[in-house]
Image (cartoon, rainbow over all chains, first blue to last red; front, side, top):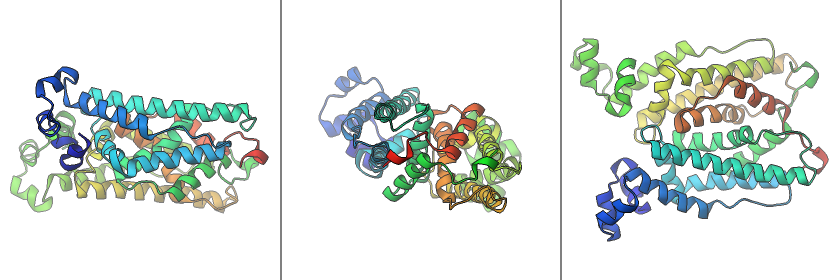
Length: 176
Length: 176
């Protein structure tokens, strides 16, 4: 099904086309996935569970950098590049909206796993809002994947994590 | 035209419909805007220049918070809510891709104006990559506007700027 998404795009994909290509009876497809969005969502759930492991490098800096690089690389190629096309249609369909929420929830759980480990190691010394950190990490990746269609380069992923860890270089006393 | 976008969505909008609603001859519309994307892009260029002034509160914290709040509010209501629908179609059309690039470029210029002022005041004491900071600020806003369709609440905008300014609470010596 991913090769059909690649050639036809999400808008052009039909269940009839998937049936023809896969040799699976259309009625069988409809029994399992009652609509195009549910079929597409199921395909991505599978592809994403396989492609996005949670890094464990031993440092928060290493983990966040590896996580961000892998998310950026995911959207640059293969099923991920198609996922960006699918994510652009979340407004038009509730099932794809749920897929986007699941991906965000999964990403947030990954971030919480990393910050939990960093806290256990004594690296993180204060409270962190995992959902907010997840937004700050994934926002630039999804913005580029879905809106500008230019994937985040690895060097930018590293610089982004550096900025998040260190904060902006301000004269703290005058900051507010 | 914005009211037609509101009722029909970007996908359902036609130049014929705009001509009917506006009373402007279809041929005249086509002379100025040869395609639906160019007409939509022109409308948003106008709406956005009007709705998004650059804040000047006297502090970097105040400026960044005001900027992020205004961008988040823009997508929550009025033409901005429709802009999210339009931005989801950037992959399918080069003119809308250019609109997204212009919006990003304008946002980046706004961020550079704020950091330039903060540097002149002595608030910013080191180098800042304005494009990266622009991504970190706008990423969560666009992610929510275009993909999850839940606008960033003002409290989250404030927390996001706090995190960007201060960095994560780490034991810096052990960070790497």
